[in-house]
Length: 500
Ligand SMILES: [Zn+2]
Image 1 (tube, rainbow, N blue to C red):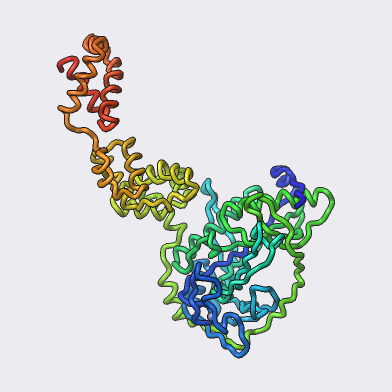
Image 2: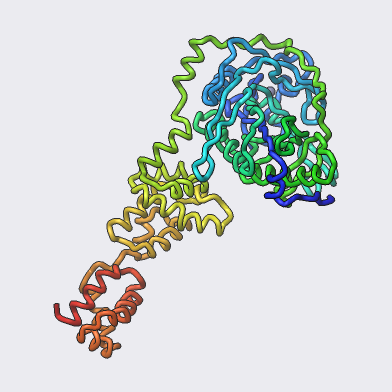
């Protein structure tokens, strides 16, 4: 694959203004599919959750999943959208091997939710208002598995199709064009998709796992010369499956398109594929605005009617939305902007909340999750929240430190034990014999031994050179295998040496 020329990012921003647009697909976590009774579950054996309806056999008839409608309305409300009193499904006709019907049931000119907005916050606290054009319902297609060295269609020996995902309910959230982001376009993209993910997660309507594809994003990016009104030609980068990838893909497209335009060429209107491994996008298929899907109202389904009463009842079920929750918790916990941002960026909010509920102070919970546990998780290449240690266990660890049973340093050994499956922190402390030696007589015995070994140091302390005590404290701590309170040891050393 030939490498595209890229323009320096800052230079690209001097010359051009980026305009963004996002289509975010959210897979709903209903028990059954959109129009049939098949299970909607991730990870089942290939083609085990299928029936005549979801693979479109002639004569089969779809029935709308009421729960999917409710979830869609709740998403629309959380995005500040108006909810259509009546809306219809439409057939979007196209052929693709994972679409057995050769059409997708979607919504066209009558989406269930329209005209909303999402407030997002960047790392430094700057907010942006992202206008939402619509949120509509549709069914997902199946999935192709390309068999070959790369796992991609290029170079595959053959491909297999799995229809388990065909007919899974989706809500597609379409933003309006996003202007005025300037050089912060990549961050805005990341924060917007992150905000949508957090919202649907808080509503409980989706698993919201980008790595499993339950939230997927297509990013539209175009550039126009600074000062020009008319929009430039856009590309659509498909299926960007992590927040970090959204940021990187937007940045890449800005640099690539700027180089194309600066060379006097024009940007091709096309879909592009994001390659996570190499950090580049590559050309997909050429896409014109005149793509004709020959939409027509789905004749097998009646229109969906949503009364004001139903909408208001669903509005009453909305939880505290993420942005409001973030500012509440930040204030309650007394965190600085930076401390709170670390928690959010580490995807640690849920575990932190659970650790605080289990009795830890917010600062102790933050310290362990963003410190030692994140360090261990990074070394393993996993998320800290995915480590085999429960919030309640972290709270117990913090309590052991607070009550003086173990020191911070010993706590790290206790974490090792918990992660190794040796049980709760208290059990690890007991089985590994890690409790701090708080028995003064044991400490004094060790101190006397250290004095006997280093009589010159003892003499110095007696002469009032208390800074010399460090050598004795070090030896005692070593004898206690680190399991002593160094401040207490210091007190005892000076008392013992000077007799006060
Ligand atoms: Zn089915």
